[in-house]
Length: 266
Image (cartoon, rainbow, N blue to C red; front, side, top):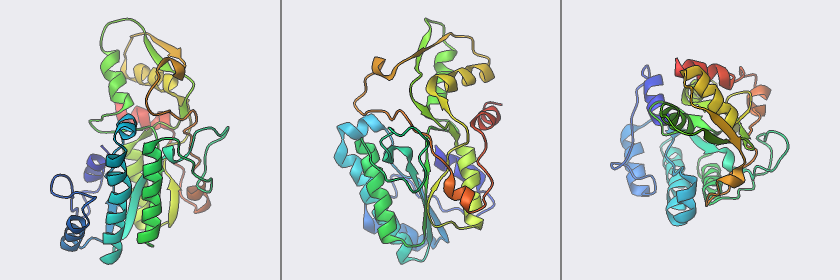
C-alpha cells in the first residue's frame, strides 16, 4: 500500500521497483543482486509482514520477513553505498504509556509482529550506518487494505449498527503524508529513528465516525471496548507517536489526521 503511493509520488525520480516474486527480501543473494543491478542512491525498504494476528500464528515467517529481510536489505544497501530508509511501526512499544511515545523511549513489544519489527530495526542499525528508520501507525492509502477501506465497505452496506473500538488511541496516517515526509528526508537526511505519523489523535471509533461523515455514509456506529473483540495479538491501547525528532531537526509538522483524511476521501 505504501509502495504504490511512493511509486506515484516519486515519478520525478528514477525508480527501481523490487517486489515479489522476483526479489525475496530474506534471500541475501537475491537482494544483493537486485541492489547491485539497480545501483540506487537510496533504498526505501517497505517490505514487511504486517498482519499482526498472522504473525502470532506464523512467527518464523514474521521473523524471516521482518527481521532477516531487513538485515539482508540493510547489508546490501551498505555494501553498494546506498542510503537506507526503512519503515517500522508503533508496535515496537507496549502501548501502556499515558502519553505519546517519542523516539527516545525504550521499545517493549508485546506481539510477534512488534518484536520482529524491532529486530528488523536493530538489524538496520547494525548493518547500514547510513539509515533512517521511520515509525508509522494506523496507516491507510491507495487501494488498501486498511481500516478505512473496511469501514467504507461496511458503511455502504445496510445492517445493524457497527461496533467500533473506542478504547484504543492513535494517529490515523495517510500514505500520502508518509510519502511527503520521505520526500523531505531525501533532500534533508535525518539519521536514526523518526516518528512519521500524522498529528492529532483519535480512537478507532472517532476515526470511523470521521470516515463516515466525510464519505456521506449513514450506517449507525456504536462505541465498544477492545475486550468485546478478542484477537490472537493484543492491540496497544496507546499507539500515539510524538514527532520529537522532526521537531528538533526543524522539519515542518506532519499534517493533522483530519486534514489528511479529508484530502484522501475527496
